[in-house]
Length: 84
Image (tube, rainbow, N blue to C red; front, side, top):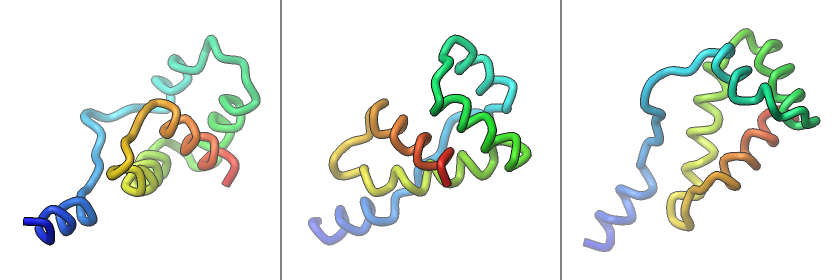
């Protein structure tokens, strides 16, 4: 059971229910006038959408499956993505 559990954790895939558009991201960030939110929007415009963001964030969050994923972890990953 331990090996099976380890295998499943190591090979889990994170997906997000439903799609999100750059317009929706703008709506979520509209009241937040921070350097991080502006950088993220700039990166998304440069990337021509949110597809790369969603794949990258899902992949990065796999690292936190064992310790837990929370809003702070996701925020840190969004900031890292926007700075890349």
